[in-house]
Image 1 (cartoon, rainbow, N blue to C red):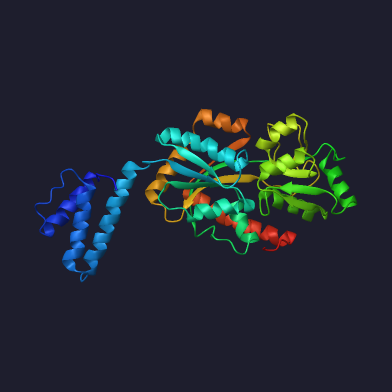
Image 2 (cartoon, one colour; image 1 turned 90 degrees about the horizontal axis):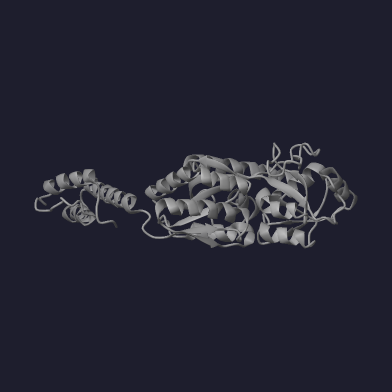
Length: 369
């Protein structure tokens, strides 16, 4: 607990102390220790027989602790849990914004990559982390998709997390290995239709957006391919470059180096409009497959029960960071678009996404594992 409380809280404490006969209690320095003394004295004097006073004591203690936290947070490094490996889009977004808010707050934000199980390992770790404001999570739509695909998760996406802030969006691009005899999305679909189950595609794991996007493509075009899941999109991209798989849907940012070097061939971006970093690559609709869209969003969450003062401070710092011209330029260069939003806006978006992906899972016939 912090050493000092606000002047307003001290005034309230002084009045209560006088009414209880604690006239000699000195509150001039507004110490949190004295606040606890008053709250404890209320409890002791009434011996749990006067419920209004007990409630007052509890509220007073909460007021003091909240006030103290707001004044001192953060007083130590913050752990940033990232449910995908280094180099993944989630990692890029988390580290980029984490570095900025660390500089603004004057406190370290330490990335902790916990990849595995399609992102659910990191989500589980974040859900069970102490809700003290020093554990935060940056994640993708995986937090909305996982409950739809997995029956025995150790977390509830709505109950076990506190939304903090919306962060960024990244568009997806469908890329194939150069050995695949298809120069357009239509040619790729025709190839898959001619050889059912022979073409394979990689993903960052079951339930990730690149997995569901490929399931959507198969449903729309009535084709069948073989799914090869990896522990993160970074490994899936490596598998594509090496020729281990034929196709992967990747976020534009990590796909760019491979596209520019000719190690993969882009066929379409899965967005409404063309992406400025890939101006010559058509949208899926331009490529002849309307309805084939899948963007990735990223948000910051904390374990449920995290103090509101910490959540508000983190949101304020993120909102401030997303107005910084230098950060915005870095995000643009990496293919990220800023997506600022409040905790309530992120909460509504998460609920809408769970509904949207639930409908998609039913449409493509995905069953819970």
